[in-house]
Length: 87
Image (cartoon, rainbow, N blue to C red; front, side):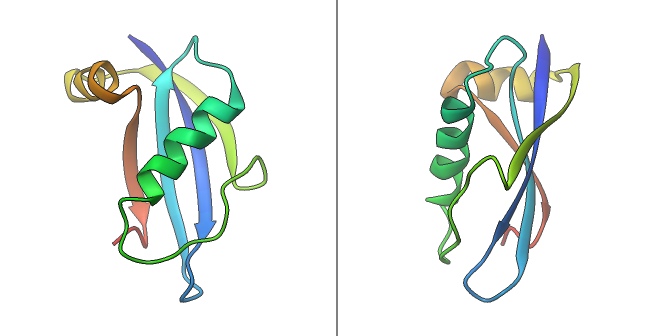
């Protein structure tokens, strides 16, 4: 499966910047759908963050998904790669 990688930066209430990627099937192109996936992920955090929009989340590239990514996408529609300040 080919996935689109959406590079995402969101400011936390403590001032740190979260950096994570939202991976979705490459045929999912509706930005609001992708932003909603990001919001769902942010809602799992114990800390508050700023809003997620096109200013914070942009299509970066397309890549081949691993089996773990495919299973997550089949289960919930997306996969998150945590990069910085996500915990």
